[in-house]
Amino acid sequence: MRAFFETQTKFLTLKMAKRKSDQAEPVETQEVRSVSTPSVPIWEKNPKLVLYVLGGIAAIVAAWLLYKNMIVAPQEKEAVTAMWQAEQQFGRDSFQLALDNPGGGYEGFAALADKYSATKAGNACNYYAAICNLQTGNFDNAIQFMEKFDGDGNVLPAFKYGVLGDCYSEKQDFAKAINYYEKAADAAEVDVIAIYYLKKLGMLNEHQGNKEAALKAYERIRKDHPNPAVNDWRDIEKYIYRVNPAI
Image 1 (cartoon, rainbow, N blue to C red):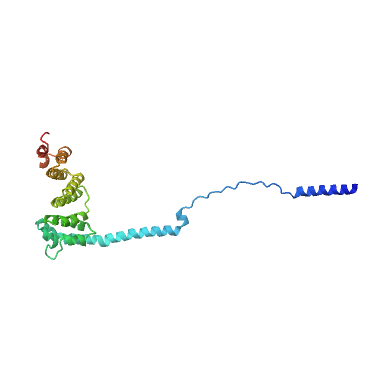
Image 2: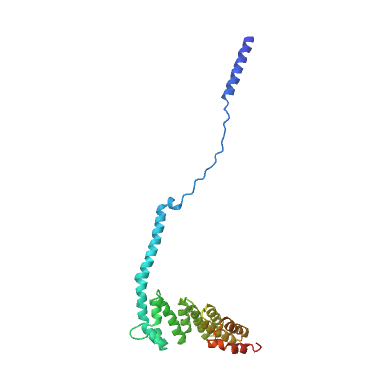
């Protein structure tokens, strides 16, 4: 019996020792951190795409230069020549002829404005056509041509608004006329032009019974554009007195 217990004790001891040896050793874990890689520029990722884009831009620029040099430039010269007869009639105040049939086989401003719309000369034809229509009483046509006219610089914007003001005044749409005269005066960078349209603005407001607005326009002439060389400036005091004798 004692030998049995000794044998069992030895067996259990060996079994426990084996169990301990079979247990997994603890594994040391390490936190895995994601490492961000630097972003790659698009021209490195997609070199072909970049080439396509640059090639497209180059093609657009080349097409524009070709259009400008091969089409617009010759049309500009052609348009200037084609305008000559219409300008002669315009200078004679033959506005209907200048607009439609100046003679000599030449086209009038109405046709030229459309035919050479991509040129500066064609743009000028819009202005001429607007004046011709205004002078012949076709106010709606005058408005259409003047709205197409692209005026730039320190003079033309004021003239564009001023002619539109004249058209609407003739149509007795005085609210629009007043609005355009005010725009013309604000756009004018030359005293003579500013005074001219401020006077129109004041007189139309006066005609409409808007004495306060008329006085404001006349005061702008007196204070903002003092120019003794201009008759309208020298005479402005009488306009001011007419709308407000108390001054």
